[in-house]
Image 1 (cartoon, rainbow, N blue to C red):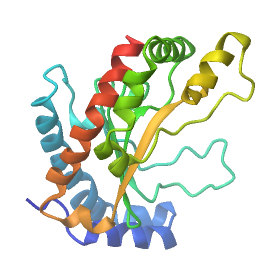
Image 2: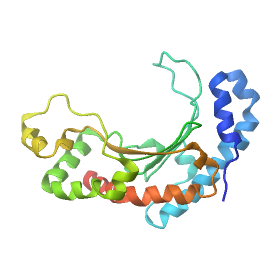
Image 3: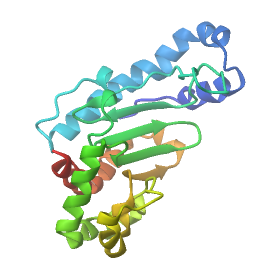
Image 4: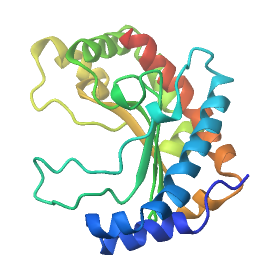
Length: 221
């Protein structure tokens, strides 16, 4: 099924050159027709597909979709709108990006598919590190799976600048323990947005990321 027309990407391309409230308000109906409404329908289908694998996922599209408005309070760039549309499907939705899920970003440049822990708390980070230390080979096996590597490459994230004494030996054996984030990123061409295979392709990503997400979820609980 095709959820989006070519106007999805066209809207954001035009917004890039007209990133101000006057243009957006003049195109509000177009935004709702080409972006907001079809994205909500698409996300509802994605949630239902994911629930086939995770019956504990109880969330609505409105709880997953991030606002198109930018937070410009502390930014030099005062452009009011994002040039992409995003959603975070997880048990916590957009309000808790610590819980592993699938993060989607649609833009005229690319489709971003992300998973893992974006901002674990200090306590959650400690639990992830301890889980890896207990069985480093288990974590390595998951992230070196050929399908995971093909779709996502490697685990990303900011690292500790100074490694505390208690973690030095562990970091020598497994450098990822120095990470302060554990996330991974896949990309597809923007043409996927208007493709009839959109949900199927994204579910392939979900199935491949799922073991790593489940490992991290189990660790932080």
